[in-house]
Amino acid sequence: MEKEKKVGPIVATLIIVLVLVIAALYLFASKINETPGNTPEENNLAGTVQTTPVPAPNSTEDLKALQSDLDSATTGLNSQNF
Image (cartoon, rainbow, N blue to C red; front, side):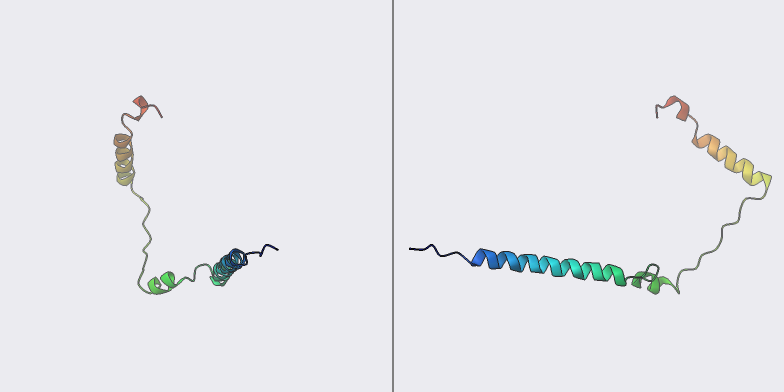
């Protein structure tokens, strides 16, 4: 008697591989079609977000205040091991 080959596992494996290949192609195609800077999230926010430039400190008082803040923030860092 000849042994009959089981076809079920082979067909199941082929179906799984086919589904994985189709999913990979779908994801790859969606990445190609996506243009940078033109995502739906950015399109929805394009009209609502307004940015204003931050003015640079131009007075010596601002610079002194920034330096004193920096000095107070870094006090004690020399004693720590980094």
